[in-house]
Length: 308
Image (cartoon, rainbow, N blue to C red; front, side, top):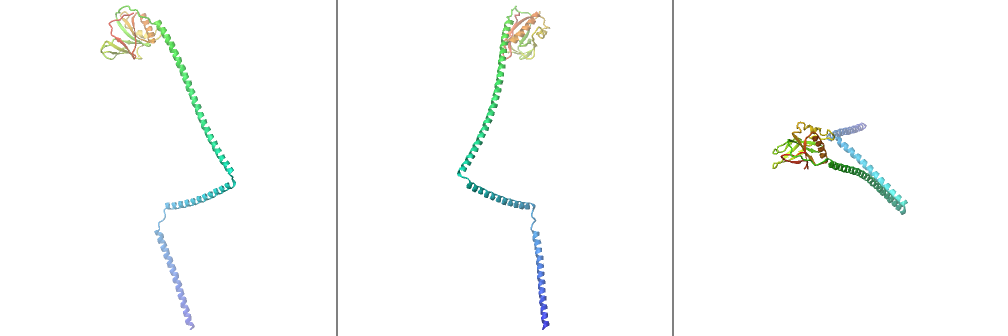
């Protein structure tokens, strides 16, 4: 009887041991399955990109910053409410009026300062314009004085030229028709321009120191001295040397000189010098005053000249 009980107890322990072993085996099996399942799931989950990680971190940072700013705003709002309550509790209506009056006074002071600055700028601009106007006025006065001096000088020169004209110019004394060959010269300003024979029907042409434009309808021609050419007539005893050199090959016994003199003081003065030179060289001469039109004068065909 006692032996049978001992067998029963041994079987119970074996069953318990088997059960424990089976439980541990199942746990181990389940752990292996969980590990395998986890590895399989982890293999299917994609690895996050760097950009996604950065965005996540930035979002968390911004969320934290927003929460901090909201807390700061809440604190400031509570502080402002506290200041308002303190101001209302400690300030009387009279004090508020004084504060408003002080604020208005400060605004009035700022506006006055602004107006003063504007007035100062306008004053400085006015002073600058006034100085410029005075400079222009002084310049105009100097110019006026210069013009007045020039006018006085011209008036004096005109007076001298009129007096000189009265003393120097005289009517020629004709001695009858001249024989020989005429030598033509135009006297303009302080120069003598040689003018030789030309073709009355040849159109525009240059002869000597002049341009000739004959008329096709009559024996009339327009003569224009060429500026910069000709013989200079200087003041003094040798003022007509260049002119007289042009007469070196034309002896006085077979030639005479015809002068076309422009109607201005300088031309008359040059003619006087040339006239004295040809008279000293025993040349007969003829002076014909001309009135120019646009710098040119008109000549007509003649059969002879009465010389002086």
